[in-house]
Length: 206
Image (cartoon, rainbow, N blue to C red):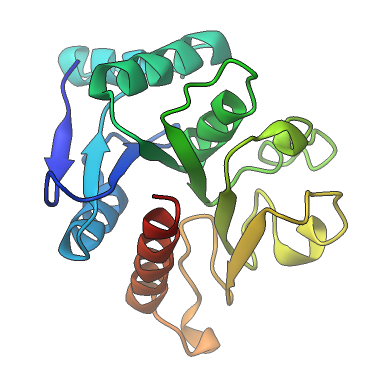
């Protein structure tokens, strides 16, 4: 499996999983990985099988089924063989949390962090994706825009989510943490805040 690595090798390790539609070297993934690297975190990126195939063929493919995604993430952890925080954008964050909820999860997993957690599929708020969250054994945090279409603040506040899962809200951010101009915030500011929060979380999981 091919990896992209950023940051000092001796730093705390973060395995960073991409979302459903964008590869490991998308602008968001690059910005976050480089930002964390500057703060002393060793970030390791990889691609799920369907995305790796897309890179070779140039043809868009749907994500693999959940068991295949989890098996891939498990293989990365076993390959790296270092204590790590699992971090992911949207689908990558959800798969990280699902794996961490498994009773047989590797003891190397020290934390889970999701950017833009997909609490429900697009346009289907009745189909919740939170049943496994009480079983997540490692510390978990979520960085979420308050108007995320897959889980905005008003909607998420009505859900029964374990109190020990911290949700760091970014004002007016969408699923990519991007705010509207009228909010007074910029996308760059929110990404910077997300990186700072993530670095603090990862270092506290050591």
